Amino acid sequence: QAGKKAMVMSDFGLAYSYFDNGISFLRKKHWEEHYKLSLELFDLAAKCALTNGDIVSLELVSEQVIAYGRSYEDKLNVLYLVTCSLAFSSKLPESIEKGLDILANLGIDLQESRSTEACVQETTTLLSTRTDDEILNTRQMTDPTLS
Image (cartoon, rainbow, N blue to C red; front, side, top):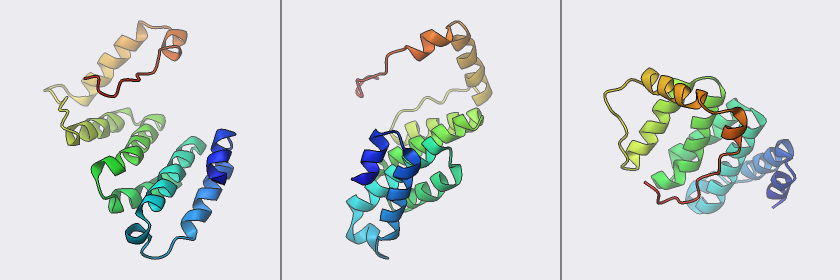
C-alpha cells in the first residue's frame, strides 16, 4: 500500500524502493505460492523503474514476470513497459518490432510487406503534420474493444 501511495504522490523512486523491499521479502517459491502478490509487486516495480529511467531494474523485474507469468495477459503490462523503454531509449525500430510481436501474439497481425523503417518513416510523416500541442492534447483511447 505504501508503494501505491508513493506513486499517487508521484514519488516513483520511493515507490520503487517499497516494491523492491516487498519483493525481497517474498519466499523462494513465491510465484507458485503467492502468484497474485508476486505479479502485482513486479508489475508495479517495473512501472516505477521505467518512470525513474532505471532500465536495468526494469529489465530485471520484467524478466521475472515474463519467465513466471501464467498467461500472456499476465505478461502484457511488463511487455508494454519494455516496449516503451525501447522507444524512450531512441530504439524506435526495436520498439515497433516488439509491439508488432505483442499484437501478433494477441491475434492481431499488422505485418505487411513493409519494413520497420518504412513504418517509422510513415509515422514520422504523419506526425509532422501536427503541432506538439495537438499531439499532447489528443484524447487517450478508452475503448479497449476498438479494432
